[in-house]
Length: 254
Image (cartoon, rainbow, N blue to C red; front, side, top):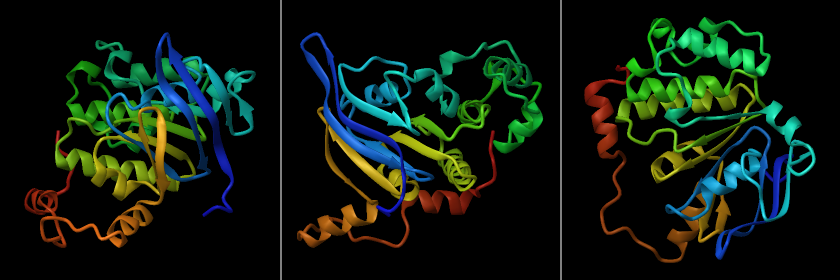
C-alpha cells in the first residue's frame, strides 16, 4: 500500500480559534484512488480539517499539498480538481434537478449532459422534480452528483449517509465504491463504523484534534483482537441490517 502515491499530504496542521485548539498537529497522507475515512466523535476536528484541505477555511499553521498544489499559494488550482458535497442548504429549492446541474456546470465552466449526470446517481426519473420535493436519500445522491460535475480527482463527503434508511445507505455505499472504481479518490467522514469498515481502504481516528490511530480497518481490528479484546456478544455472520435488506430488498426506494 505504501508504494502508492499520496494525492493529499497534511503535515503538522494546526487550527486555533482564539483559545480553542480545534486541530493540533495533524499529519497524514491520502493515497491516490483510495477511500480514506476520517473518524472520530463530534468536535474532534474532522470537519475543520476537511474544510482547510478544501481551501474553505484558513489554517493557523502547517502544510497541505493537494495533487502537487499548495493550499497557501495555489488554492485556485486545488478548487479546480476537487468536488465538495454541500449540505442541503446549498441548493435553490425551487429549481428542478436539470436546472440545478446546468447552474453548477455554468459555475464550473463544465460541458456536461445533465441527464447523464443524473443517471450516474439513479435520479434520471426525477430530472424535472424540484430539489425540495426529493426524499432524504435522493437529496444525498443529488449532492454527490454535484460533486462530480467538474470531473474532480478527489471528492470530499462529510457524513453522506446520516439519517438515511438502510436501503438508501447501502445504495449510497455502492455509488461511492463505483466513483472510486472510476478513478476518483474519496475522502469521507462518518459516525457509522460499519460504513467505514465496508468502504474505507484506510481510516484515521481523530480525537481532540489529533490522530490517535491510522491504518486499514482490518489491521486496526486485528490489533485490538490480538490484545485480548473480546466482544460481549457472540459475533454472528450477519447483522440486523443484513436481515432488513434481505427481507425488504435492495432496490431504490423513494
